[in-house]
Amino acid sequence: MKSGLTTGHTGELIWIVDPTMTITLGGDARATVFSTPNMILLMERAAREALRPFLEDGEESVGVEVQIEHLGPAGLGDTVRGVARVTGVDGRRIRFDVQAFCGDREIGRGQHSRAAVSVSRLIENLVKHSGDGGIAMNLMPNRGERPAFETLLVEISDRIATITLNRPRSLNAVNIKMTEELEQIVAWLAGHPEEVRVVLLTGSGEAFSAGDDVKELQGMSAADARTLSLRQANVYLAFERLPQPVIALVNGTAFGGGCVAAYSADLRIASHAARFAMPEIKLGWPPGYGIAQLTALVGKSRALELCLMGEPISAQQALEWGLVNELASGMALLKRGRQLAERMLSLPATALRETKRLVHLDEGNLPKVTHRADTEAYVRCLELPDAQEGIAAFGQKRSPRFTGR
Image 1 (cartoon, rainbow, N blue to C red):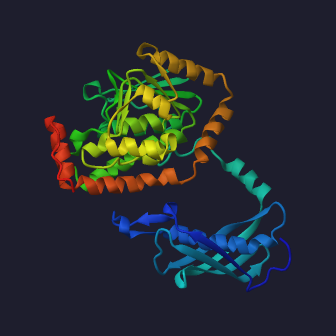
Image 2: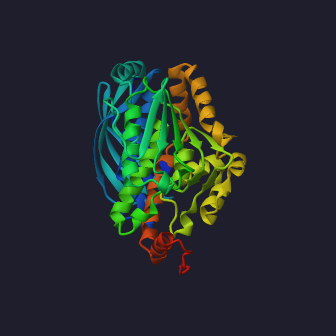
Image 3: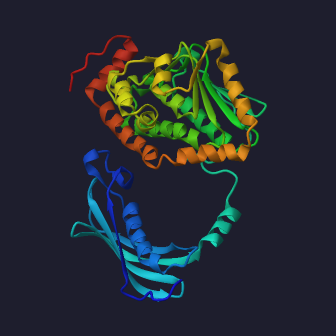
């Protein structure tokens, strides 16, 4: 470190509270507040700014200890300010008093210490202690034997895994059991990056997937519906964290959660007969997850059209909108998928994994957290009379009679 750092030196940092910094309390969007972890981060970053002028080239400061009181709230869009004042310097370890403000109102305070470290030494330690497989969202890699499945068919040949959603009589609707088995296969794939290098995902029979199994929602509590929705969102988000590229082969209907499963893959090939839709609005609720990923692919206007109208689009429209990468005849769909997979197998494995990771990493954090708000809105609507009418009408194969509220 450079000389000259003394007690009393301060650093400040100003943020505008955005959705990635908030938590929604009690499932009520009006109670969306600046979260405690982000308030702590604001104050830590203010201390980092205080130290920045005193660091040598190749040095950085890292947090060592923090003790914080959260004193008051700040809301979405508020301006918050972190202040850090040096209270002690002990070699390369520096102590701070830290505060957070919303306007003139103090919302947090405490003590924090940081240490100046060599970046090259830090990198050496990271490389030394890094494993060969991380967590796929909240799913720990399974490096053991492949589980047996009831709702999935899994075939592995020449380091290519073909996963088939296998509830053809229900158009491969994703029920609780299939959700559990998708969690299991994602965890197993995360733990076997050498045995499986590319994943193909398709559906049995005439559909890719009709989405969530609406019949299971009858009688399900709000808490259980929330848990199931978040589990399904995590499974599809985990596709991008897998070391293997995932190619969706959409052979028919891809509606709702099935559409999300398809566009959560890294690449999508659709048969000419495929159709895509986000029809949840017609049942009385918004999509429970996946809106941000859809918007990233097709843009806000197309995403709004799909989600507000609930109408299906053809495979050709999906191609024109950027929802799929290419079309193939139904008979050639699997063959085309394997051709792409084999081309990927001929490429350097580490470079392929790193490229996938970096593309998804560059999206930022927002698409990774907005599914929580999606789920809360979905659960709120699920408890309303219109949603109950939508579920009843679905089971009775008739048009729903909504109240319009």
